[in-house]
Image (cartoon, rainbow, N blue to C red):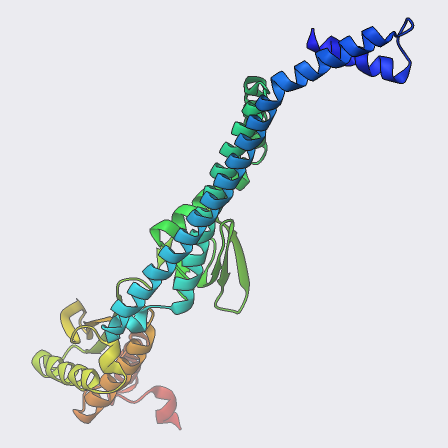
Length: 343
């Protein structure tokens, strides 16, 4: 009734009414329009105020939550740095760049999720106040979400895998990892792609959703294993004592004293043949430092054995000596190869 009065008033003012407009009709239409506006203006103001209040609350809540997340991430980093500074050995293992990238990635995910939830909820509340039926809209959004999920399922898989890798701290920047198809040092971890630097300098870009298993060579500890092969006639106790002394000397030297986490241990005989025996030597080291410790340990063991007159042999040299001995017996039993005797 009021709405039609407004339309009649507009038509009368513009001269487009079907019949001649009299002053009484115009007055009646104006009165009805004014009454309609007076009856509804309070609802309009209330709806506008509610929408404004929703927007203000959403903005303030989003700002507060994002700021709280940033402060929480910084506080966690400060506590971790303080704990690491009290432990020199652990401080050597912690990579600042790794912690920074992991914290930034986790903080970015949390802030984006909070913003999406707050803004989405506020938008739905505003549409509801405007009198829009949300049921068809939500149903259409659900169908579109399902279609998008099927179309971009690989992207969703990569993102979810990246989030869980960061939250679980499976690996970080500076770690040496083996992911099956590629191995190398982690350069950067993203929500979708992980970058590795290979042994030959190449950079591998690996989608997080395609990583089925990860072997982290930089977490926990590593093992340096050295096999010492000597002649079968050597005295076992003497060989063990020489190797043990070389290991103790290594553990007292810098910087190997920080890289070795446990004393060098002679595990015993790994194999025994008629011509040789192999002794296994092992040591627990800092992650990623086992190769350097193995090289230095071989160097020191070789020098210590040489001082005691104990030779390190291999299968090839033993086979060559056996061949020369047979040649010597066939050529006259003097133990000299036939070719050398002819010379």
